[in-house]
Image 1 (cartoon, rainbow, N blue to C red):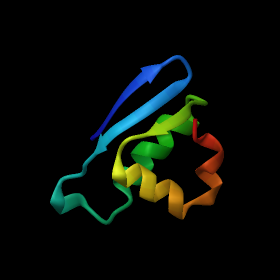
Image 2: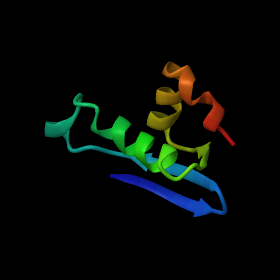
Image 3: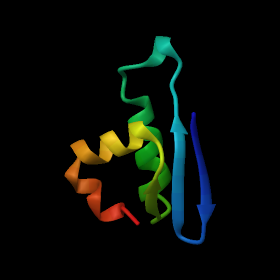
Image 4: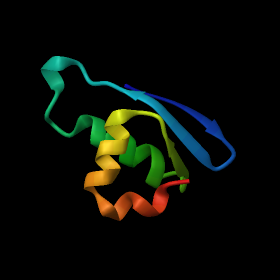
Length: 65
């Protein structure tokens, strides 16, 4: 589950969570990637998971608002 708000061409992620039994399978990463790249949105981060993901994956730095 990814909680976010949309405003124009910017998505603000506020919380991302995957049930414990499904963690460490890349599900949250795919949620974030799909929500952003598919729509051509810029990202404003308020979610620690999303921030850590972007920090670790420089190829997504261009998406930051």
